[in-house]
Image (cartoon, rainbow, N blue to C red; front, side, top):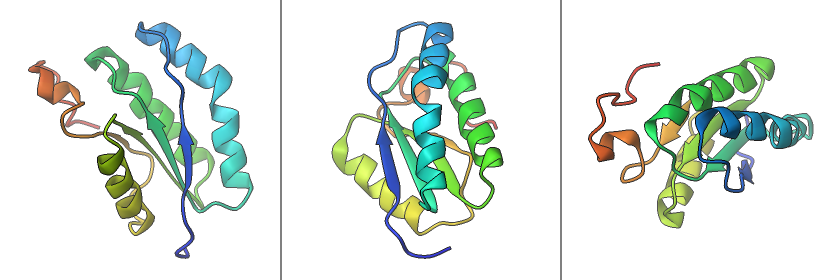
Length: 123
């Protein structure tokens, strides 16, 4: 993989419930992600707004399945609201070709910060 800049896809706010959010994501965003990979972007970083713990499973599955569908590309989903943190993670992912298919909630926005039992470290 080269040192090309990643394609950054910023997902608009999704519905509050996990089931509706997953449906809206797949209906409105997966095609854009697939197109970014097809257009030759080796790295695709999908940026989402932070979400409650019950969104983690579908987000992990989406990251994993998109990466498996495009094995010659690194596709990851990052959740956060701090522009600096997102920029640093995007830069890091652009230098880390072994990291793909991951859902990465950034510090201060993940379920761990809210004291939930599901600490989002599995998977």
